[in-house]
Length: 219
Length: 219
Image (tube, rainbow over all chains, first blue to last red; front, side, top):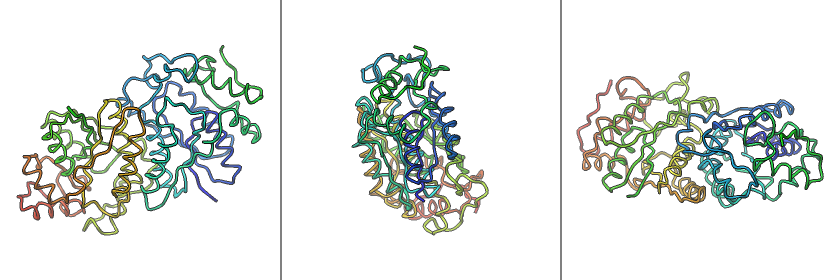
């Protein structure tokens, strides 16, 4: 059975990817990263989703690195989370420098320890140009480095890279993924705020997918 | 002035590299990584060396990741540090999976926050084939990924890649680098043990360089 480490944020993309990999017959180890994000609620969501599937779940605690990140809205409570559409320039305030390389490097370390054959993450066609480390050219270069980092070869997989978020929601429904357990909101309250970039994107994806949105939004 | 983040272990290679970069007129920020290594003494050495040079020194604490690394001699007190020559197969027990990518990813995050133009580390021609992530082909792939990870381009530098440890010691003497402050031993006692792979290599480098070894070895 193919063993895979999945970077699992507790959001829609990585949760549908979890269902997708299990449907392929993979043995999945889920890794969530605690980098001091304000929306720590997603770590709880990730735990519940992994319990639902009976999948091993590990949280890698990178909070001690916060002093290196500089001020940004995802880790610093003094910087406001921008409202409005995800694609707007204001969302640049949510960038943690080099976040994806950090997450993937940690996942790759775990994969090498587990003798897994891959690290998978939920990058998709709708990922945004404001995040340079979401670009396929970045992922291709990092895949090459990971394959060379250990005598036991691990590759980097992005099974959803050709899909948009709407198709991912549709795939989730097909696979009976518990979308109601997923978390998107960057604000980090008890309920989804309904206004921040990720909430707006979440609402749109359900509408476009023609699927009833199970989320209880504040607004 | 060119700003550079140096990965600084407190050992000979990265300490001579610190002197070398300062001699080039760089503005250097030194980063040491606490990954729960048994030889934590090297973190103290790194601090003293940075104080000597008046260089900003930051420790990135990755100890919370230890559960992902599996058993190895550098982080697990139950696994013995092999004695004898560094190049022997037994030194494989000192491999932390994907260690270099982790260290470099953290350094690159800091470099992007600081708007530095490069990350430098002390990889050299004598680095060992037992560490796959010491190979130039790995560093080249990772350099490409780092350049793509942020709109602010950061590159990965290995100024000593064409030198062996003997030449590095000689360069250190030329630059009046305080080699007596550096730490190599993997065992982690109050003095250099004189027997582990890194101590054997340290002794050899001073002998071959024709330089008086300032180290106080136990044996």
